[in-house]
Length: 378
Image (cartoon, rainbow, N blue to C red; front, side, top):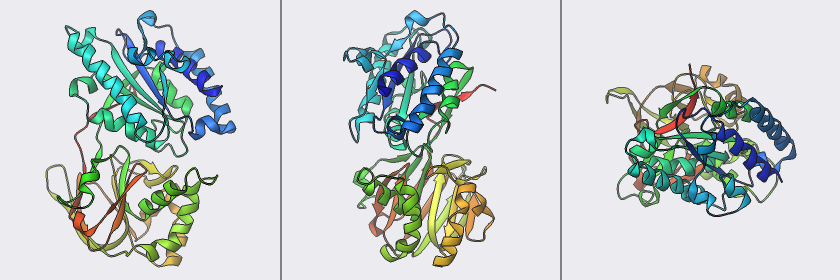
């Protein structure tokens, strides 16, 4: 069975990991059994090869016997749990699994005479963007002491994998067996106006890209159709959205004010916008590797345009060449304040919420760097 092989292989790789030299490693793997990397035969064959190659390349860890999965996970007794893998069972499941790591790490750090004498914790997600969004949301809320002794690795086992640490599984696994370092990254937070319709549904966090407008509509419709019919519905709805979006949602004027990290105004505009996207950094993709933020700039706004122009330009996002078109505005900002007269959809790493007029003015802003992700050592 592919899930059992995945669990055993990853456990062996983690046991020999170089993530925390000199400290015992504790890990949990949060896996979505319905993710494309598990259920699509062609994808699984590539994953199998990547796991075999990584196991063969892993070096012997002197602390091998002291490393292992989270104790609370192992106690459940299943074959997968013994390896540290917990399958998700539905929405919210990854949040609860991640909280198990947070609680166990907090308890261990509380008993240790010094953090370096306690185990180091590894949170691995093996699914799509929704799985990593839930797990990272739980870690975002964790005590700073837990985050300081934890690292995150997001494996590309889903369909889109825009939030994964590499689009290729083999490359992502190398972060476990080659010298790596931990880099703190921010989230993007959506803050509706106090008292608005959406306020009680939050918090709204994204760890890749948060956006409003046409692309959020594509995400919303993709989510509605997911699981009902086969195929890549994101790609299908990109085509359909160009025809339907203006009929279902009024593309009215948005008042936008962008600020830098010191509170200085970067720009101010009043435009009819098809979309407004904010990434935790530049060089970000969404919608199955669409290069909406292809360079160092972390904000992209696209002006409204006639239908034929939309159809002509939509293919440019795959290569990131939309940045040269007059409809596109890209810049760097830490905080975006925006308001409008009409409802507009927002999406946070593939999850959506409808903003009503009462939710304006709303804000999209970068948080402080809080998520400890693995990066290759320089």
